[in-house]
Structure formats: structure tokens, C-alpha cells
Amino acid sequence: MSQTPEVEADVPETIVRSRSRYTNVLHRPDPDSDEPYPACPVRDSEKEYTEAPAKAYLGHYDLCENPECFGREWR
Image (cartoon, rainbow, N blue to C red; front, top):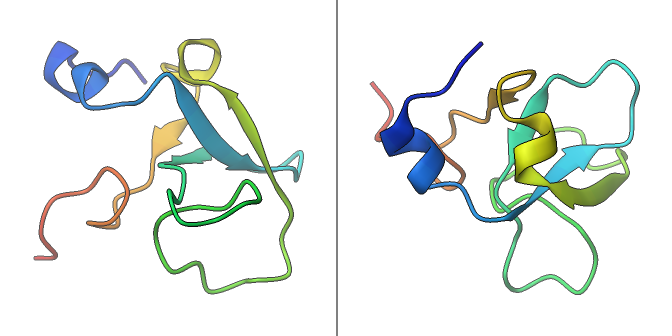
């Protein structure tokens, strides 16, 4: 899935993703966390996250649609 240039401009250089091999969603990093953790409230808090370069995953992964990550207001 290719992102639009407008969306790509809104993505920081470093993103957060689940360490699960089945993950397909990228998150904005939580600026208040010392550990790699998404900015949005993730329901499954048992997951482990890692930081990664955004350019390596854009186009292959979806962006989290939560307003605190990359989404707009909830519909």
C-alpha cells in the first residue's frame, strides 16, 4: 500500500512497531515513554515494541488510524 506524499510528510523518521512477525501496523512513538511504545492507547499492552526507520516500512505496512498516531478524528 503506497502512502500519499502528505501522509509521508506527517510520519517521523522513526516509528514503533510490534515485534510480532504478524504485525502490519506502524505507530507514532510515545514521546513520554522511555521504552519503544506507541503514542496511542494499545489494547494489548502485553505486546513488545521496537523502534524502526519509517522509510523501511512505509508502503509495506499500514499506519495506525488512531488519532494519537497517524489517524484523523474518529468518524
